[in-house]
Amino acid sequence: MLSGLAENHRGALFMVFAMAAFALEDMALKAAARDIPIGQAVALFGLGGLIIFALIARVQGARVFHPDLRSPVMIWRSLSEITGRLFYALAIALTPLSSASAILQATPLVVALGAVILFKERVGPRRWLAIFVGFIGVIMILRPGLDAFDPLSIFAVLGMLGFAGRDLATRASPATLSGAQLGVAGFAVLTVSGLVLLAVSGEISLMTTAASGYIMLTIVCGVLAYGALTLAMRTGEVSVVTPFRYSRLLFALILGVVVFHERPDMMTLAGSAVIVLSGLFLLSRAKQRA
Image 1 (spheres, rainbow, N blue to C red):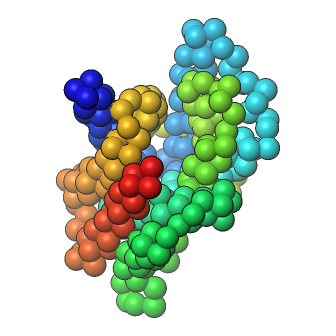
Image 2: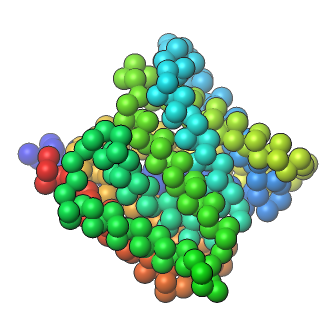
């Protein structure tokens, strides 16, 4: 019992660390995009992470590009990740970090809905209600039809849907793939996403000292976050560790206020709370069913 409790504590700490690193990654990417095109920033970020995970795979004696990466599930995962990375990068660059991060927290709700449709998982009335309420939280942040509505927030919604598709595909991904090989695939897709954005914008800027520093910070935080997230999901009980994913929103709110001087209004904060509470309720119901 005590060993299980210790494992849960370690898993929770890994998860909180991962979410803090992801929030710093978002902050650095948004800061870099002030000096260089967002596509250029994303492509450099992806290339840096790709090189690091390729080296890790080689040190582990594994193939950098495993044949299973070409399986239909992994192709679906890659296309979903391109969608998620592409639109979430635009959301980070063009909208407040706090609101983009809040909308991203609805990903588990979409994953739960997708599991019902694709994997025929059973969902009771209470879980359906939690999913519905969570989407109400997203609408509270978006506020379509009102003066506070920002059309660019749709990028965050599209990015969230892409990440949900990636997570659903990950559930069915081959067990033969190591964490480093999945990292190679993820950052390769990120590089492609950046190149797509560059092709659309058609501009490349000279790197400034500040932008170079932010890109390096993005790469370091991204690799650390990915590694810590993998450790978190392999340490302790998933139902105990997973809720700590929502700490990312807290870190994003703090960084948004401190670094970018954002001032989230009460509706954004209320919508964020609704999304988080709905997600936590879904997780608690899943644990009870287990």
